[in-house]
Amino acid sequence: MTTFLLPAEPIGSLDEYLATAIGGSGVRRAHDLGPTATIDEVTRSGLRGRGGGGFPTGQKWAGIAAQTGGRRYLVCNGAEGEPGTFKDRALLRANPYQLVEGVVIAAFAIGAAEAFICLKASFEREIGAVTRAVQEFQAAGLWGDCTVTIVAGPDEYLFGEEKAMLEVIEGNEPLPRWLPPYLHGLFATAPQLGWQSTDNEAGSTHGGTGSNPTLVNNVETLSNIPHIVSRGADWFRSMGTTDSPGTIVTTVVGDVVAPDVGEVEMGTPLRAVIDAVGSGVAVGRTVKAVFSGVANAVVTAADLDVPVSYEGFDAIGSGMGSAGFIVYDDTTCMVDAAYRFSRFLSIESCGQCPPCKLGSSAITEHLERIETGVGDAGDLDVITGWLGHVTDGNRCYLAVEEQIVVTSIMREFAEEFADHVEHHRCPRPRRLPIPKLIDLVDGRAVYDDSFWRKQPDWTYADDA
Image 1 (cartoon, helix red, strand yellow):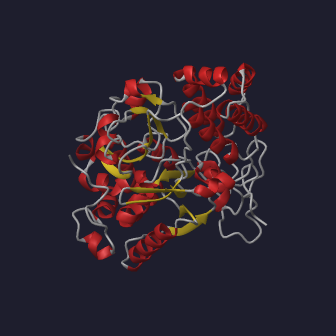
Image 2 (cartoon, one colour):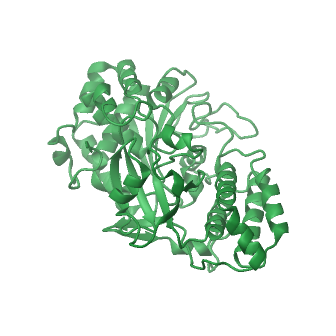
Image 3 (spheres, rainbow, N blue to C red):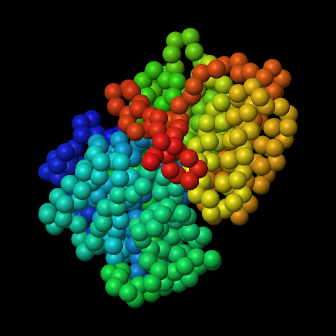
């Protein structure tokens, strides 16, 4: 099987990258083709966004390039806050140069005036790698006319939400806007619904007026670009499926022998991915449930042969997300899993939409009552009621995630909820970590234990 995004050995310099078959050739071919033909090549490849949404990349580029509302901007989303996911950081550690070349090509194709590469400030190793790669590209004359800023953002989950990311770039908190970046982009002066426009008159270096359409692409999406532009759309389509071409970089953590990141061809069965990337579950254990982050419905043992593709997961009523798979074996309490995922989302909710913050917090509280043995049928009724309204007025996807993931667990494992309510105890007591990854190396996942001290206002319990 072809793998190209994760080299066998990390690429540590521009000279090493240029010595590979791909290094620098994507930029050269893009300039030979011109912006329109470059976008056409990406469109023909069928590349879909690897940030979780799976939107056709070429279509997204073409939409931005066709707009005339002020300046155009490019944003690379490397915030990676989805539990169970480490693939963007793995890519930046293995080869930051393909990402930087992808940014150069994308900026050229859409006519971006400026590019922003956004990472969490806690990703110190990755920020260092990207900074070095950008500087080497610039010194070698490979960057082009577009200026670039590397943004070190906050640790909040919503920093990775594209509308909130624009707010952070502009110096604000990660609070999602109403309108998407292609309608209301960076430093836009055109007002949007219930939101204050940016004043570019008082000393701002970002001139122009209007909506400033902004392209936001994920690290993995942009890392694919040099390979596609250099080798051609047909090469990319020779891998994967018709609707999901290429490979995907997947993370497998949880109840597996050796958590890891690996590149697999789209269409590979989920069962095979768990075995190949995570070395399977322990001897004597079986897979009970798999979550693709906290944004999609649970995948049960009956569906482990689902193809890892957008259409494959859609067919079973779930979603592939960023291909970060959290595996739970048969010793897991699914009520506890629901509680912990719900708590993560309720804490990370920003509070701009009251039904989201109030609803996710109430759902979490009543799930905890059931899990700890003090719940009753009334708690189930409250949870069900809030699940129908938690998304009211939502301006981002977080409330939908709460609705989808909790509803799916309650539906697929209804007997476990009933057992907790009837017997007032958890039959499978073990503390499940929130798989928010700090590091993943040599088969060992390091989770962020400090998250349990995080409070709904984003402060920490032991802060002064």
